[in-house]
Image (cartoon, each protein chain N blue to C red):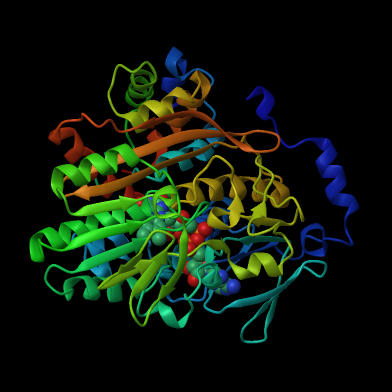
Length: 90
Length: 422
Ligand SMILES: Cc1cc2nc3c(=O)[nH]c(=O)nc-3n(C[C@H](O)[C@H](O)[C@H](O)COP(=O)(O)OP(=O)(O)OC[C@H]3O[C@@H](n4cnc5c(N)ncnc54)[C@H](O)[C@@H]3O)c2cc1C
């Protein structure tokens, strides 16, 4: 499903199981279906997720909670989260 | 994957030498058993994640006294009239229907940690390979002279899940015109550091609308509190002159409370209230004490796994644990539950164990569309859970930003309750 995407440098080192574990931190706030207050991210494009996380990490996107979460993620963790959320049903 | 490779050969070898000690695991004839006591922010999350992620390989039993869980989080918003009471109640049905968790509505009365059994109120016993305790807090009624179980109806604490907050709301709504609401916040450490101050904000919100000449006096056993600058600026902005906060140094200490005369006596003065919310000191839920995994009032844990220092088969989550830098919050309990769930699966089914990662954000509502927040990331140090990075809302934020913060908290509430109960 993400075979084609793994060639993408931003998704290098992606590890599905690790992504599943790390997703726990996101799911405290992000729901699968509703966008109320906090956007739903299930099924989003992997590259979109990775790029957003990098923007938060670099503090180029605003939101204290997301900046904090992203600042503690390395490249491999971001890639892992991206492919994991991409695999979930919308 | 590098350092996250499959569990080492050594741990496999160890598991197979403990045939006698862990028959359920090593014979292969029965699934390993996890018992979770307490279906709140920590326990419901742990039960759900262990069952969901092990895909049936682990037999999960959740023992919870109540049929419905009414969240303490957002109970202040119910108090302020921003939520219906029913909207903060949740059922356990999905945990069994969707993930096969065996939900038993009963009290866990005692733990026999050498036999690895939990005794229930019904007299039945449930055996476990790993036990998770997330019983929340017990109130130390004798920590304030004059307070007692009976005093709860006159001076409700409303600090545990349940209907006391309804009593409190009725009392506030029926307060005499120009009357006094007194709040006695708890001493450290306690569940939800910003909670008492959000509660004051919500009471002020009702009084401003319905009883604008009423006063709020806060008789604090502390000299400072969480998000103090933000709350005090908010009270001045939205409820000017209504809230008087008196710190411990000023009143000199709370000597006693009298539920009959509705008086609160301090060194400085005796305060007479029409309605009083008195929140005593707290400790870990009794079952943690009974299991022998507490030291003083709380349970020390190993930060990397949430196993108790006293017994590696027993994990303690949430308010009952000593999580050091992490506040006692629903968010924290939920975060700790995922670390424990991952560790327990690794121990029982040899699945991969990833490094512990913890986080917390506490949102509070000061007035309509005026939300504030404080949050941090944490890591497992050798001895303690340590802060990595943190943030707090600023006093000069504009209205649009505060409204957004409030809306974000609604997303969080829906998110965490889905993460616990879906
Ligand atoms: C007014 C208020 C506002 C709050 N606001 C927030 C907030 O905005 N955000 C936030 O993150 N946190 C908030 N909190 C804190 C939050 O409610 C707690 O930190 C959180 O619930 C702790 O989770 P827990 O699993 O440790 O305990 P709990 O959620 O209390 O769960 C414990 C459960 O165990 C059950 N239980 C206990 N002993 C036994 C036994 N022996 N047998 C069977 N069942 C048992 C209880 O019935 C209960 O359901 C607030 C708290 C209060 C009081």
